Image (cartoon, rainbow, N blue to C red; front, side, top):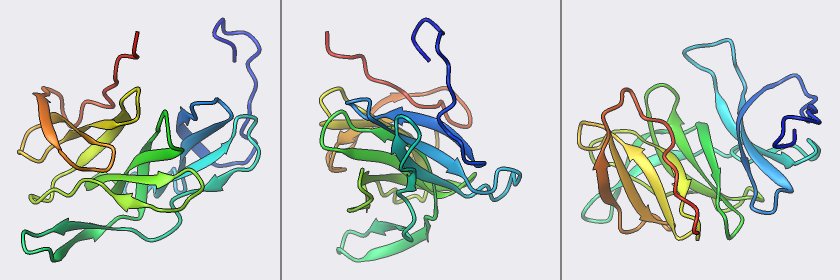
Length: 188
């Protein structure tokens, strides 16, 4: 619908549960969460999808199997969990990428990024304590990602470079279980 609330129209015609839209910078597409099993509180099976702004050409981006891993100090990897569930899509303002959470719904997971054509899915965060990182939000220039995490045992807001490097704590958050997606102020 328009910003004035007029001209509302439904763009999703398929009988699936979709939520959490995130518009592409040019407004021609949107990423969304598709809940494969919406009636199950324990196994909703969320996935990240993408479609044109008129509802056409709908496809699922997160079909491939993912595994959250921890990179150990010696360079080896430890499997944390399978990461088949995905939610919280956030479209980058540049570079055609979508950041999202992936892990086991209602338990834990990590921040991932995927190209908007479904290629090059990669894990960005890895928590050595096996705690959740969630709700990615891109900086206006697409160079950083803000996210919430429980890695210290309490809820915190962190920021990292868009490639997952240079993670650092920004602030404690007094919210449970998680605060929801933080956002950046647009450049003025």
